[in-house]
Image (tube, rainbow, N blue to C red):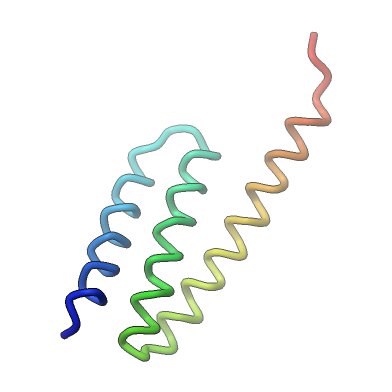
Amino acid sequence: MNWVAETMGYLAIGAGFYAISKKDMAKFRVWHLISSVFYTLYGFFLMAFPLIIASVVFCVIHVYHLRKLRLDKVKVPNP
């Protein structure tokens, strides 16, 4: 297998493990988004379409929730 593809796979795993260590939901989503991007690249190297589809869906979900968290943070007035 291509060493670049393997590196993408290991980076995806590492970012995913790091994501689950985060208690803050925003940090979790950012790191899981990074993991999903690496999984998408890994899927392209392997031409594994189920992996590409799943990781792109995860990216969309995380971007949506990060945007929602950011908008909710802006709406809350400071005491």
